[in-house]
Image (cartoon, rainbow, N blue to C red; front, top):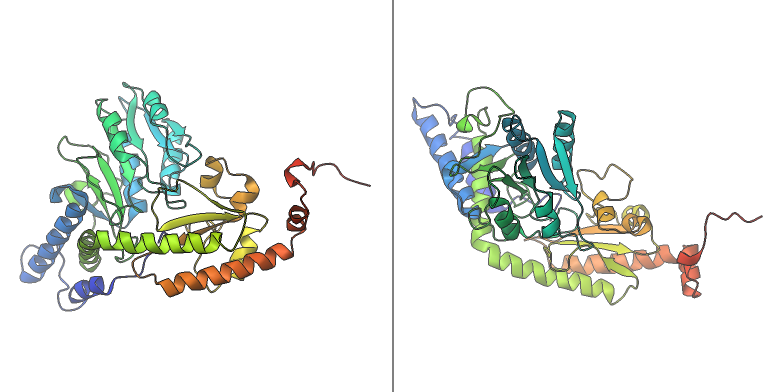
Length: 398
């Protein structure tokens, strides 16, 4: 599930004591209330670190992945500004990474936006060719795409970046943490962003992994009491931090089961739709994360499809940018035609999704697509064997 996930009841159970009787400030060092909260925060830090193969001291708590991405991308760039002013990212990153880069470009940084291949995966040779050994400070490539589920080859990217001293590797792992195995040392990741509510934890909390050995330096965005190694000042919300830790521990323990469950349901959805509806295109790499399925239904307008399926929680792109009626910039970066980008739907499948829900979605979509196509003059032309791509629509007839 991409926009969000339901709070796991076990996570809520872990949080409740810190919302009631154990309400201490984790930064208060002079009484038991503070000590209890501090101990809980330290434990959560270990749980988050354990999920990604990090040291607990490398974990910095934030309000979510958007803050983590802003803090890491801008922070690394600004700290190294005197020596290096070049950043590399991809055209399919989350909006908060792209907007952070846009902001940095206004400050004088040179940004390279790498294209992706038609399956959504970055070309490793292009990435390495874009690195300027004496100028590049950061390469930012997301782990799992939030719209199409494409998994980027982090291990290979990390290996390339590590060959260039002074160049740091950042990955936005909001859609990957707790869903696919991640190991910051094996992948040579220097800084990483994590979100709580994407892995069955609470909203309003996230984490940033900031490597200490070799140390990654960054300029903090928030100033104040110097909490979180001085990188993110402010009193930590103990209940949310405890919830994030519990969610990470559960995700690590149950990852094999979750992956099997989600893969089976994903296959059930794709097979069920493809067997009953023609002209469906799957967007992105078919070997991507199975819990994110993006399909385009030809000869159907995506907004009409969404409006007709109000009982189902679907989207035509990212929840963060769905207020826009523009076709998904991620699908356009893959080379998708505008009409197919407009007719795409994103399906999120998660830990608590059931077979009955998948079957209900298949039934509703098949019926709705057929109904909308019956109303479409384009569909009628296709049924008559007319190649609509060969028609010059600009020619007006009198």
